[in-house]
Length: 296
Image (tube, rainbow, N blue to C red; front, side, top):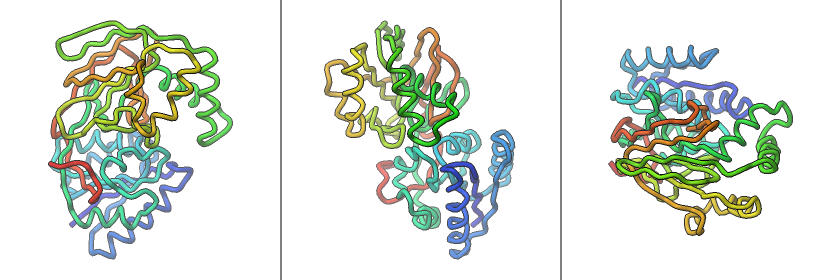
């Protein structure tokens, strides 16, 4: 068996390199031939990964966060090559989806060796794939602001960005098209989930399944800043969907339109709105842990 290990050395403030060393050593102890890729740029990493897939690698292991997973998906989607993940980022929502233990690179490597392959759906926007959640609105504005801040580093940067955006936030007028219906709504945020969580375990689309051929849409309608602040703690349990200002939908194809908004998916910047999101059933093979909810 030949496995290609793709590492983002900057993920997790350098933690990915240490995780990668453990994963590679464990795979080799199990008798696996390992090829390593560590691109100097995202473009270089993607091209090297595509070459490995074309050459017939038996599996691709992404060592990093959801951003690296998103890059790897562009190489393996619609191919026979399964993807696994050794989580080493800040969010690691793809790892949660696959049932991979966080903070245990040996267990992540053993999942590869155990070979439990499932198929899962992917979302697609203008030919670009994503695995977990596409978001727009208040949360994407916070991410934009955080990316512009040079200080502080780490999670505190996002907390500061949230406070800065909250002080100036106004409701956003959206046009939603869900399969054969469309409507306008003033909203705080709109998310489209192939999987249930984003942002490190926030269950924004708690009932989303990545193997049901549908996208889950969560709309938080316009509300006061106080209500918005109170809503965010409920996201980790997914109980926000019971609140009166939250609506949920399901569709195979979703178009979002809003002036001046950008979208983020798998933590990566996607095109500005309008965007058309479609689900592609069984788009990728994945190697899963025993705790994964993926069935097929």
